[in-house]
Image (cartoon, rainbow, N blue to C red; front, side):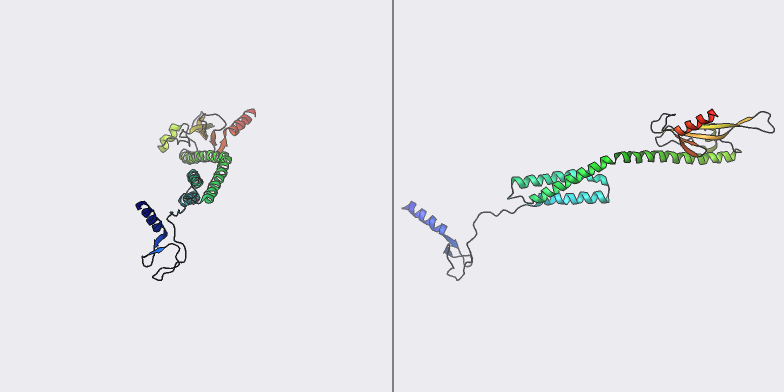
Length: 256
């Protein structure tokens, strides 16, 4: 009897519920309570409601926007941070596939991942294609810096010439004794070479010709650091030449 009574009480408890208005016990499915409250639908069950988490997908979108903005405003090298965006988007896709009830934003994460990968491939191709141009620009800046040092040195040599009756110094030591400065280095921190181009000047009171420097040559060994190769940077009479041009000019003078 006791077991039957327990089963009956349990069955009754299952069939009954509390009225949300007065708190009295009423049968499930009843249209209204004795207090007058009417029911408009079935009560909610006790199964927990799952709310999809969009955090991982939205984080990947936010990271993509942040990387693009930083690359455009600050420096293009920040575009390498796209690797973080790819990892974040891939994580969001994986979570959404493994548990679609808890994690949403699958399509958003896939779109972000595909867009980031496509943009990264495009940027990589652009960078590889422009490597030769970047190297040429870097080489041009090196040469320009060396030429600027030569022009500064040439202006000091002109001051020496004016102070010594139109003659340039015969040696670098003569130049240093006049200016108190050594010859400046080129871009590669190697000393610029100075060579006097001598000529004979006749003195009225001196029976023999005095050797003076009527011109000069400044030479940088260039990127390879070897004097005499074609990448040498040469200045003569204030004009910049390549070493190959100087060789051709010297050969033409010797053949005359």
